[in-house]
Image (cartoon, rainbow, N blue to C red; front, top):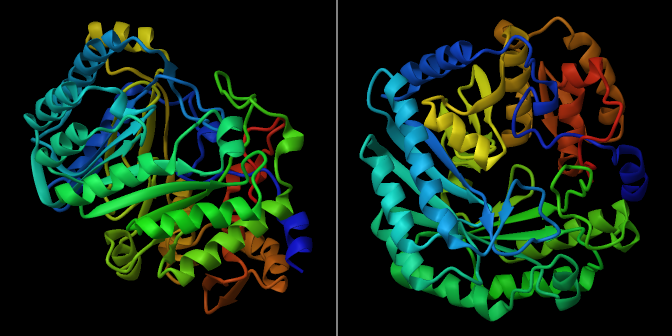
Length: 454
């Protein structure tokens, strides 16, 4: 039965870190003034009560991992660190200059690229410079992504002294054949070292990222990787489906042939196996592709219904405003999105002219905001409701009609104006969200722009 469902529902679709998704942004009517107005509106509504989120994109890596679809710049020249840090500080200053009051930081996350490409000294300078123009919200959470091969004890101590208590390590898979295919040679000993160092210093949440569906990967590899992961007992685990998107410009996903990838059915079997093994180890499924121990803030946010999802992935706080700094970063004001230029040289040039380096964006209309709420509910709580008039929209009857087949297949139930995703349907939550995605339904893409849902 699962095989037939996979064959039926394994289609290209968004991962819904936003709605509308980036390919469906109305960039023609977007202006910087509209973006600033949308940001200030969200800031005024949320800064004092809950604070805002800040995301820093640090794009540099010393080598290319061929599974990665993120925006990066490959270099071994660490002279790039200082100019980039100065640019991030300049961009933050430009945002602080337009905000009506001093921002209160609830969440701060460093992603990449490889944040630990930067020296501890430069990272210390960066974070202190940013915080000079901000205050801290109650219960703030700072986190960063660390590469197990180059994260040092000095990195961990520096971040800890700055207020960081959560670190995420990219593991992917421990099998050497898989590691060679994705150009990410990373011994278990390195992951063990940095995990234990983080705990010894005092980090309260250590996360490991694992990927299934990688080239040459088998169920035995997944079992081995999760067994080693369980021995380190990270507080949360991201168990991602490999997104094969080799058509993206600058993407390194060409280190293997597509015939080396597991089939859709094999990928789903890898996921179900991993999910079972993680459950046996005490991990609870959080939204899509995430697992956490009951002691972790991500699990607690799920139980008290404050789990949120944005361009940083799943977060424990529902901040309305998220400012993204750095090349290719995307900012989210709830009422609008804005993405920075992707080229480092263009990024520097705009900042030198005193211009916030946004290249495109989208301002959400009333329909967008309603659909965004439904998709966010589905991705974070596996249910949504339209019992309130504010969550009804003109095409709702048509959406419900299109969901009948999924309900017949046992993926969801609809009762009293509430849709609930079943256990059987959780692997297909992206497909369920696609039924609500009116923009995708009105204009199907003519070329592949999304990864497969399974």
